[in-house]
Length: 347
Image (cartoon, rainbow, N blue to C red; front, side, top):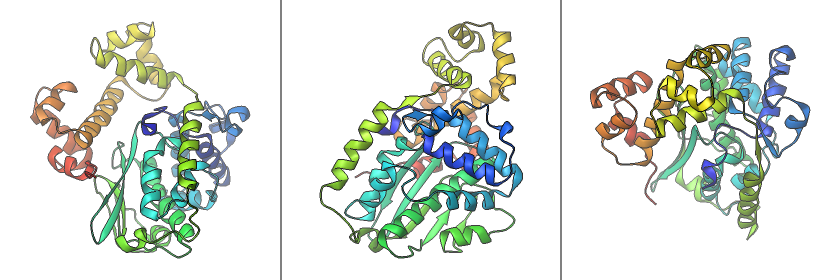
């Protein structure tokens, strides 16, 4: 599926938007100009996909200059319709908004790192919810801004497509509550916002998302989906050393085991050199193992019915109890509760 294409990378369009917002915040360019993907050829060429780490670093720099709620608001101001290419049109050109949401979720890889982020839609007779699953910690400030932005972007795009202010029933954010909420109230058009949820989501009245799009053109969605497939397939991912390390780590986990010596051997360096390079990139072996486990556990809980003890064994935990402690530390929930919250509905 397109959603699993080019993991660890994002679209150049997002990198351009992030860089423009960082510039508006007064962040010196020498703080990020050296990052992979910031070269003008790569930044302006939509065929390239910069590393997700480049975009994350830009978010990290921005939240040191302003509260994450204000960064989210600034980013929304910089994301004019059409800047995200075919993905914008997939979301807004379907027969109904709910069908546009499904297309946006399927082709998430067109704009975001679908290796670490997922969108899925659930619905009943009264409400439709779009959930945004992201594996970062609840307390990670940059992730707070990214999650809030993703939901605000969906609301803004659908409101424009429907030609009316689409007010959500409620918002859930997988982040700690900020000191001030005014920016979020303005972004979402509601004060009904819950914080410290394991998954971020935006919920609308079902009738709003099942109504016809005012400017729907028969056959256009089919053309756009095909164009999205071709665009994603033809993209050129840019890989940083850290991306290469994470690929080697995953390969080691599937082979000899996710050990420092095995991973170092796959990269052709000594374990000591590998640890030094990780330190140079602002991370550690322990942190990378934890991040890999978290992403895989979240994925398995949301996409399979494997027993907890099997998931624990696959990810190097001594037993199911150790996995439960880890999941609770990450999300504040048990694995069973997280599974209920992150499992896409059966359609």
